[in-house]
Image 1 (cartoon, rainbow, N blue to C red):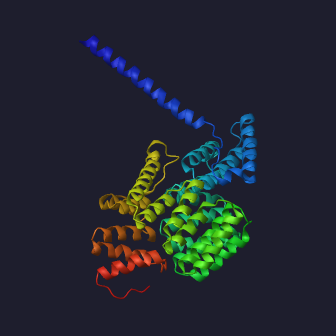
Image 2: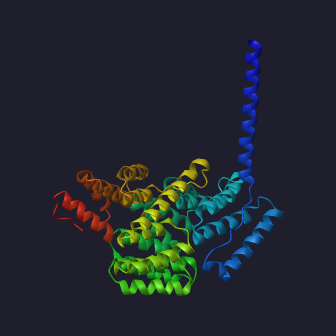
Image 3: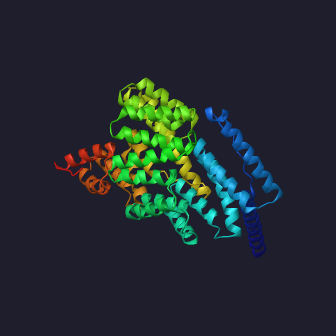
Length: 418
């Protein structure tokens, strides 16, 4: 019996060592994996920019092949992947790729400033806002005179609901380098504080500071259009969306802007067409979520459900990926809360809204989401304090104010200081 037990223990030990070795080998393979560009789809695949990007990536890959671990080439490739993620919407692959090269540099030098800024940027893009803010704060101590790091601090403080700190860092950023990045962030801070004229002025300056056709410039132009849209100037909004499409062929956010304008005039076929074109150019679940809503409003419930299911499945898959690889996890609970609301599953909506609130209870958008979930569940008294928190910056966003009006009215409150 003793011999039998000894044999079993030895067998278990061998299996454990084998499994552990496999895990270590798998981890090392991930660490040592090389990443390259994926082929683009849609109009952006036929641009001169794509040709230049591929050539630049090939030269960086050759440098790393000849000089493994070269920090300058590693960070340049990481920056290229971060931009490609933005252009294509393929965040899972490119976030993993960029983080790999950033971590390569940080393993050699844990205080390398540029590597820390890229790591903060990647965390923020994955909605790991607390982590991104912490890394940005670390980087700022190393180089307090860099404008880019203040942009990341602004983003982190804004998403965590520390708006006074965001404004203070915006002042520092624009004093160091007044450019498209700083102007666009000033615009957003003015917007969430209810200053639409000031937000429009700052976003105009952002557009003027950029090169026509660059992704950052046309993104700013679309944001400018959206500001006009929210203030009811739909002609100016349409003009900027169409200019963005002229400057950057097939630009998905501009198609989405035109879709919203078509929806506002109840031209459902046009809205559907624009959203489908946006989705074919850029992988972004927000387009599918809005497309689902258009199908619902136009009475095509089967298609509405189909796209809503795609959104829930896709967002859930992205979030779950973070359980397997910390470098690519993407929190999407606020988005999932709204997706489940549209499916009528209030329990799931509340679950995800509460998860997001637990991460960042000071953020006005998160409070608005939780308030609307409670209102949709018929728990109007529970909705009120969260909506009051959502209004604390003085936002004039029409969608938020519409929800606020319904919640205040349901609670018997006639006067709201909008």
